[in-house]
Image 1 (cartoon, rainbow, N blue to C red):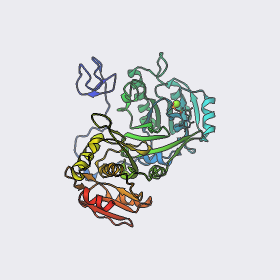
Image 2 (tube, helix red, strand yellow):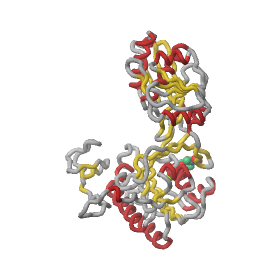
Image 3 (tube, rainbow, N blue to C red):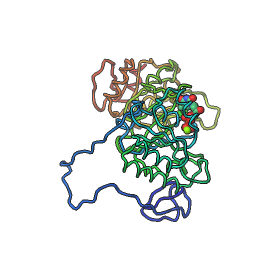
Image 4 (cartoon, helix red, strand yellow):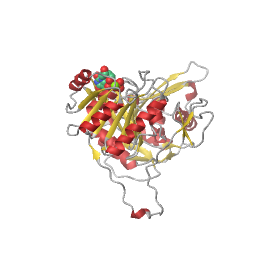
Length: 430
Ligand code: TYD
Ligand code: MG
């Protein structure tokens, strides 16, 4: 395999220019060891038992869930994020009480770590090693044989004279490969933090993603009040879940039900509409808001935050066509409250009603939730897992649910409005 040493792009051939980052002459050959056994005979797949993984539980149940049920023994997990986002805090909070854990920090002094551990009430039974040398960590692993090794950060233990976070990609990959080898041969789980560097993800964690088993990204919500942890790669589970945290002086706190948190600030004003959308594998209710003003520009503005702009163009064109409203005379601003991004077509109906509600200056009963895709003719199309969406909305206290006629019919205490098209739905809402 040939890997671009700038950005980690992989190719079967050595390329002159990297198609991903555009740099020239950056490809180096790398041996990708395959862990599949070499067999001479094929087997019937039905005769094979699925591989069972032994999993360790961390102190954050939602983190375990995100991984698919716990930290798999012998796996390597990378937590990537901007400096200052809270990686070290998260790592400390994860440390389970009952496991033997070695925490290697290349960035902080032992007293700094201890101080923070106390402040956030982390478990204090782990071993702490303050070192920038992987060798030292290896010696300690031999000595105390931990079941989990935390390395904060992977960049800091790269034996590199340059220091700082800007380590050479080759050195970073070498260290990560060595860690992976240790994990597999000694059956130790490693959790690494990795800084996303200013130049983008490219120089940092991206170039080691193919070596590790699980890649998690830790990010700030646009409102800056929350942290979102989600996975982009997981060898032992799916990558559908996410965990939402609030931050405080006492550390990170899991938000149990993100929809409840989104709804707490739900406004009963024109343009505010509850949308049933999927975030990963679970449905939640978000709030779409819109603002419509007479335009003073030659071309009316369409600005969105957290939504797909094209779907907003589509919804407004359909509204103009079906209701004859002159939206082209207005600037339209749409926003998803709570800084969450919703791009699935199922949000179409809520987008349309947010615009309609603003335009008519008529609030929508806040007990109504919406989920349907809108076709160009204004017809409504069904959405995935309507039953799941309805269940969630019901649980959160909603009473009316607007969706398409097509697709499954579900039982619920809520009144479900199955509408053929946007016009029908409009008549049912107002
Ligand atoms: P830190 O965990 O050190 O971030 P990283 O390891 O990603 O660089 O967190 C950065 C700062 O924010 C640190 O001073 C601690 C503070 N912080 C809190 O006070 N509460 C929190 O919940 C989090 C996540 C961070
Ligand atoms: Mg840190």
